[in-house]
Image (cartoon, rainbow, N blue to C red; front, side, top):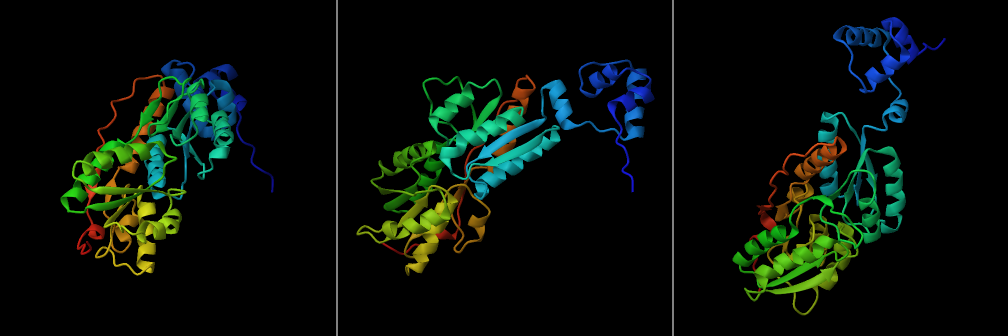
Length: 337
């Protein structure tokens, strides 16, 4: 069976009775023509079923109609929801989304981002990457926006960032915990993230004046497995916490699961809280008290901003995103002392 020959730009030009240059300028949006000429071009393209090679279009326009989004771990539902929100806006504006999963591998970040730079019109990158890579990105002749606030470096220009205020997130959660009467708290953080210090600042701004003791622990990764691995050290010390805060829901869920394995009742013996409000937090037992950081809305907002940068227009004001406290059974019915 012979293959049907695809229509070429030369075929379109012949059918419309115009030059190849005219067809090229029309389909690449480089020039407007009279209504009569444009109608001939539309009819010829439709009749021939012509579709342009994206690579060829990129060579002509210098644009790929693709935006890169690099997240630390796509298995983390927080990042998956950011991708979902970003993709919704990208598709609605005629862009494709190219996602890179950095897999928490800091050593290979620069290499992976260099590949994205060549294939995209702009980049959205998690702020939790090395300062030298952030500095390199800030000097690219290409729009770049960060998810969260990166650690600043000496050579950086002003950075475009979108994300929740980590101090506000922690302060909201700490206020609820203090009102519940807890006096010994453990925070399982991730010190390699810039937001960790901000969350600790928010917690201490509430706990210190109330004389609430806060013990700090550092997970090796922001994952459930890391929380589970650290649980014994958090829970079996001489001053067992009444409540454990995970730096995110995954860490909190990991510690909570291991607490039950160690024989603790949750929340009667030890209460738990997390941050992010990932879907899983609602379905674990007991359901996890957490702070909703509006992951999908964050993805939408950062995508709107990067598209405006690519198209050389002023972005609309960022939507006001404030954390929302979600109270569930993991912090109720505490009976310990």
